[in-house]
Length: 168
Image (cartoon, rainbow, N blue to C red; front, side):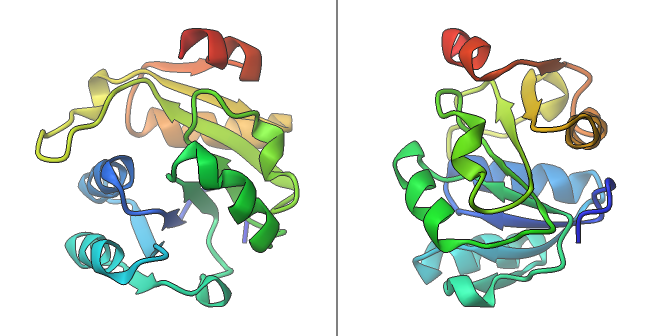
């Protein structure tokens, strides 16, 4: 449940960005409690590598996490927003081009966590050198995201959807 502090994380997606984030969180001692991916192979593999639970079923997504990171392609964000309900969690997407408000149906606490980097599958990433752009729908959400992002990098920038789109 969202309290303004991030203790438990759920990663939604299991692609390159999700994998790099999961490993970065693990290196920083952050607790990823679950990975959701619609296809089990990749999702289960990522969950095993970072010591998290796994599900491929939306109704089985852990509902008590503090932060839900939708690290999925832009084209499925709308579909996920119509199928997920996480009213108490802080929900963010990782897109440089999609408006934050697409997440409004999911939760009262929404934002964006956008690492400005292209992620390759087998290349190790040092998140301390990667700029991360954040946006939140309230001061408390923005504060939480800023604290969270600063655990990974000291290059955190607050950008709204229009600014992020220009950067992208």
